[in-house]
Structures are given as C-alpha cells and as structure tokens.
Amino acid sequence: MRRSLLRAVMAVVACSLVLPSLALAGYGDTIDMTTGVTEISRSVHSLHRTIFYICCIIGAGVFAVMFYSIFAHRKSRGAKPATFHESTTVEIIWTIVPFAILIGMAWPAAKVLIKMEDFSGSEMTVKITGYQWRWHYDYLDEDIQFYSQLDAAHNAARQRDSGVELEQFEHYLKEVDNALVLPVGKKIRFLHTAADVIHAWWVPALAVKKDAIPGFINENWAKIDEPGIYRGKCAELCGRDHGFMPVVVRALPQDEYDAWVADKKAEATTAKLDAQREWSHKELVATGEGVYQRNCVGCHQAEGQGIPGMFPAIAGSDVANGSLEKHLETVLHGVGDSPMQAYSTRLNDSELAAVITFQRNAFGNTTGDTIQPSDVRSYRNGQMQSLATDTGYFSNFNVTGAN
Ligand code: HEC
Ligand SMILES: [Cu+2]
Image 1 (cartoon, rainbow, N blue to C red):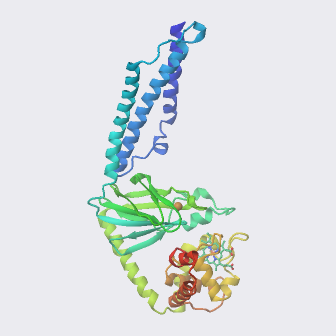
Image 2: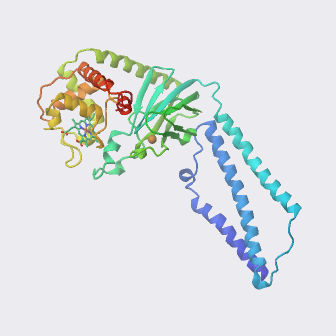
Image 3: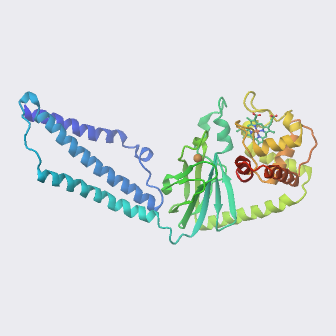
C-alpha cells in the first residue's frame, strides 16, 4: 500500500516535470531566450540555462521531499510528530547548503556582469537617444546621425480602422525607416540617454538592454559576430506609443559597413549644399513627391485623397491651399495628439520645402507656390526667436527637443 502510493506520487512529480518540456519541444527558439550573436549574449544564455537547471533540481528535490512527507507521514496512518527542538546539525546544513548554492550561482553571474561592464578597447561609439517615440543614433566617431522610427506603412496600418491587411507585413510593427547599421567584429560602445521620458534600448540578440534616462548617460557594448538583421524594441513604458518604437540593427561585414559610411557622408554633404541653394519649382515638386511617397502616403494616400474620418485629404485641403505659415506649422510641428506627427527633425529643410511645395501643387491643388529650403530655415528662425522671449521650461524644450 505504502509503496504504491509512493510510486503514484513519484509518477505525478515526474509527469509534471517531463510533460511541459515535451509540449515546448520545437518552440524553444521562439519562447526561450535567444543565444544571440555576441560573446556576451551567449554567456548570458548559458548563465540563464545553468541557473534554470539549478532551480529545476532544487524544485524537484524540495517537492519530492514534501510530497513524500505528506503521504508517508499522514495522520490517518497514525504518524506522530517528532518532538525534538533545535538541531544544530540541521541548522548548520540548511545554512551551508543554500550558501554554497548561492555562491555557485553568483560566481558565474558576476563574471559575466564584469565582462559586460568592461568597455576597454572599444573601437567605436554610438550615442542612442530615446524620444517619444523614436530613436536618434549619433555615430560619435563619424559625422553621421539620424532618426529611426516605426516604418510609415506599419504606422498607417496600425491606426484604428485602417483596413490594411496585416498579413502583408513580415515583421509587423518591428520595421523602421532607418536601421542602425553596425560593423561585425568590432567592439561597439553604446551610450544611452533620452530627451523626454525614460526609454530603454533593447536588442536581445546583442544582449544589450539599458535604460535611457534624461540627463544620464548609461553605457554598454556589443561585438557582433554575424552579419544580419537584429530586432528589438523600447523596453520601458514610455507613454502612449511605447509599443511602437522598434529597434532594427543591420550588422554588416566591415567592407560593406565602410561603403555605407561613405554613402551616408556623401549624402550629408549633398544635403548641406542642397539646403543652401535655390531650387527650381519642378525639382521641388519632383523631390517632394518622393518624400511624400516615403513618409506621408501611408495616411494621406497615393492620390492625396486621405481616408475619410481618419486622415484628411491633401487634395483640396484648406491647409495645403491656405496660408504657407499654417502648412509649415502642421508639417514641422504636427497636430496635437493626432497621428500627424512633427517632421521638423525627421526631414531636413530641403525635404520639408520639397514635400510642402509638392502638396501645394499636386492632387489638383494649384497654389503655384514654390517653397525654398531657405523659407523653411527662416520659418524655423522665426519660431526660435518667438520662443526665446519665453523662458518657460516647455518652450525651451520645444526649441531643443524633437518637436
Ligand atoms: C500616421 C498618419 C500620417 C502621416 C504618416 C502623415 N500625416 Fe499628415 N495628417 C494626419 C492626420 C491624422 C491629420 C489631421 C490632423 C488634425 O487636424 O487633427 C493630418 C493633417 C495633415 C495636413 C493638414 C490637412 C488638413 O487639411 O487639415 C497636412 C498638410 C499634412 N498632414 C501633411 C503631411 C505630410 C507632408 C506628411 C509627410 C511628411 C504627413 N502629413 C504624414 C496623419 C498623417
Ligand atoms: Cu520608449
């Protein structure tokens, strides 16, 4: 009788340990921690496994003893409690054993933590700034910086009643307009900060997850072993669109990375020159159409017809046919709490001039206006001056911040 009960208990314990792992077989890659593509991420993964197994063994041991005691010494069998009190031997054992287990877990964990905090020999530095709701990447060793935010098509699709088929997106809500491009095989130091609220930059495959706190600079690093696309997201509840600030890292072999850097620099030089010169009306409209396709079409639609009740039409719009000041304000600073975001820092002056000129002369709008990059610049300067007279915190924030 006693034997069979014991056997039943052991069977239940065994099943509860084995069945879940069978059910999860094959899902390991999707629900387990990723092994990642850096030495640190592999260390973190094996640490996670080691500690998990230790916990399993402890759990099985504790429950086995507990279930055995409950069944073997139950009242109906006339078990009588022992009456001893204070056993030095037992107390020493139950102090030393957990202590040894803790040391056994802390030792490898501390080794990995120390390695994570070792920034010596960093070969390049990227400063990452969190904004509501996008990232800004600044390559401190190169003269490269840009914003990275949720891809416009995904952003449009996620709007309520957008009617967009989500199946068409392979990585729905995990795609950005400008990925962070990094070389493989280099020790890259990341500096994390934020410009408004607390964010956290998290890319599991790189084992990089750090709070981005306004006024503070946090550090960590990664040395990526394999080229590829690695996705992550903001891991700090940072406001309404917290769930919509994905991270995409594109790791390239060194030569491809160098080519990317050269391209980016050439682009920046051209952009600087472009912002200084006079553009022809035709050129502005043509460039503006491209800017519109990349940034605005998801909401305002291909024919500028918008989506009634959600996104206003540009065709015949009061703003696109009315005062230029209002049009500039709408595009540069966005509209309040609506999905119409501020583009003042995401598009440069030439792109802004081009897309505004385009909107004022496309989809049947016939203002005939030509807006030069210099017009956008003087609008910005005017804004700065009117804000400079106001010393309130929020107006200062508007001058230096994203909006
Ligand atoms: C995520 C969707 C979305 C995207 C992308 C978007 N807009 Fe908008 N836009 C809106 C919404 C919503 C409004 C209405 C805001 C309001 O008045 O409440 C709006 C309003 C406007 C208006 C004023 C229209 C009117 O008559 O009221 C202009 C002009 C405009 N957007 C230009 C742009 C430009 C230029 C771009 C691209 C650089 C762009 N928008 C990208 C959603 C979007
Ligand atoms: Cu965030």
